[in-house]
Length: 245
Image 1 (cartoon, rainbow, N blue to C red):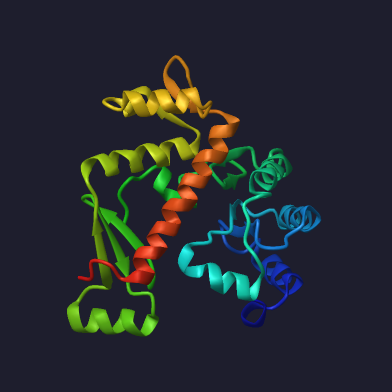
Image 2 (cartoon, one colour):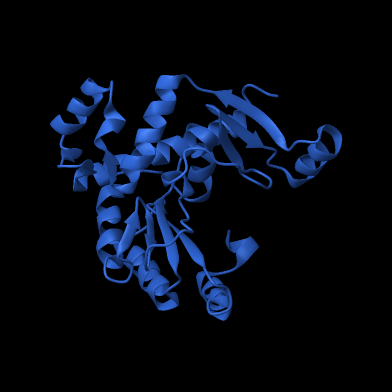
């Protein structure tokens, strides 16, 4: 991204110029990329807090089997060895500045505009090249190339390139995942999923409270990883082109 967007300092200066112009700015930062040190991560987080946007998403590098060789050739060998420790550093560093947390998204205050919209809406429509939509149990993937995106709309009247349908059980798992990823889920969400709930309790990922099922510190990391794998899976659908429309 250096050749396309410039150095970190250049990006910092560009963002600083617009930070007070737009009503809501959300900055994305990737951590746990190959050869990243704790010192480098802390530096990125300090720069983020100097900019102090309304929202930020700090998520781990998502390395699918398809992209692993490409990442290795450009950045080095990928490893999850430091992932949990770095995630804990991110949470601790941003705890005071961003008291509202959903998964890997952090906010100054509660807002109707959440970067991780899948937390509140199990169904959604994505607009634009490369966007995803989830409706009626099916995942729709828009054309990634802007040229193909425009051609598809002109020729077929739609922008979707691929479709993947899921079983009702898979949809239930997905909906529970998005809620647990945000930190808590209503007790009735696990109706009919006794063994799955029991397993999560036994490994210390969730705790049962009076009105809800909440996520433990270990569960916070576990469901962050589950969401990461979900997004990797969506990218695989896009890259492999399964179930073409």
